[in-house]
Length: 228
Image 1 (cartoon, rainbow, N blue to C red):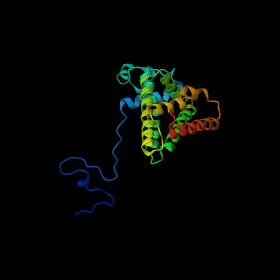
Image 2: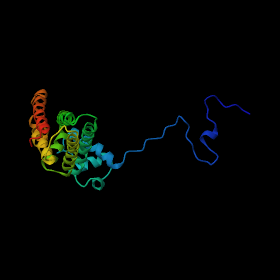
Image 3: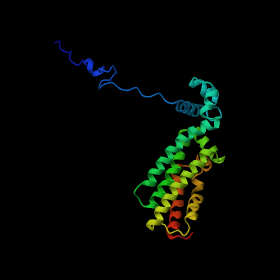
Image 4: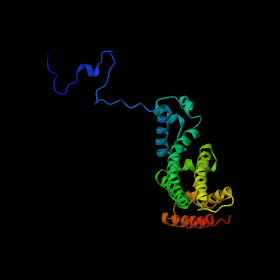
C-alpha cells in the first residue's frame, strides 16, 4: 500500500462516502456577507461623517451601495430615517454602557451619579469626535423624532430601576417615586440635553464636570432625606 505524503489529508477526511464535502480542521468558513440594510448604514455613516447630515443623500448612498435609490427606500422610508438609524446605533451603545452601570452591584446613589456623569461625558465625546453624528442626535431630540423618544424612554427606565433599588435599600427616602424621577431629569437637564452640550462646547471639560458634580451631590442629598 502506498504511504501518504507527510501532512497530506486522506480522501476520506474531505470527501466522505456519501459524496458530501467535509472541510478539514484548518479550513475556515467564509463570513456571511453583510445584509443590505447593514451595508446601507455603513455607507450612510461614512457619508455622514465626511459630508454632514445636510449633504447626505439617498441617491449618493444608493450609488455607492450599487443599487437604485428606490431600493434604499425599501429599508429606510426617508433620508431622515436613514441618518436617524445611524445615530440609533450609537445611542444603543450609549444605552448598553449605561445599562451596565445600572446593573452593577453598587449602592444606588453611586450608580445614579455614575450614570448621569457617563451620559454627559459620552455626548461630549461624540460631539468632539463626530460632530455630524451629534447634530443628528441633537436635531432628533429637539424635534422629538421617534429615535429620540425611544432613547428618552430607555433612559427613564434605567433611572427608574436605580431609584427603585435605592428606595428598597433605604438609600433614597421618597414619598413619590414619579416626583423623584422628574426631579432628577429636571435638575440634570442643563447638562444632559444635547442643545446645552452644544452651547457649552467651548467651556473647559473639567469646569463642566465640576458644575455637574455639584448639581448631582445636591440632588443626592435631597433624594436621601426625602424632602420632595
